[in-house]
Image (spheres, rainbow, N blue to C red):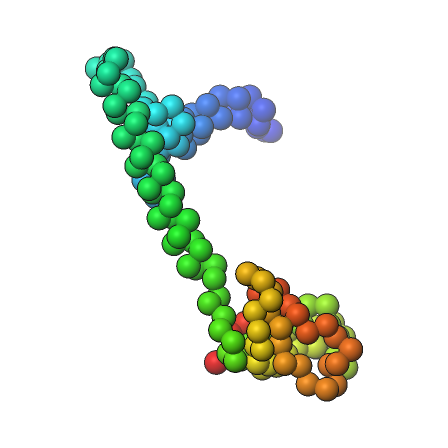
Length: 148
């Protein structure tokens, strides 16, 4: 009644790996196998390319991969950036800070507070009220939520 999962895994893993390696990936605009080996997976039914044509095809693929990764990286960066500006109001995530209540009843975000200045690429200084003066006023962007 029990399945022999190790035997099934040994039989299925190569097929899963083959399927993944030859499936189209939107970030690089080609299959991982194609990116890694600089050519599409060739079955016995496909013709072989040799010499100068192969080198030219590989150089073109490297250029395409580089351009696609740059575009994907820029797109991901635009999603990740909060594009915080000075004087924008944000709510601060109440992750480690406890005010009054403990546990589930404490609010998840507190604020809104104004951003005074950008300290680094991902760190900002907030204008905190006087009751929070014992807390350091520089926070990572992951602690913010845009206040609307």
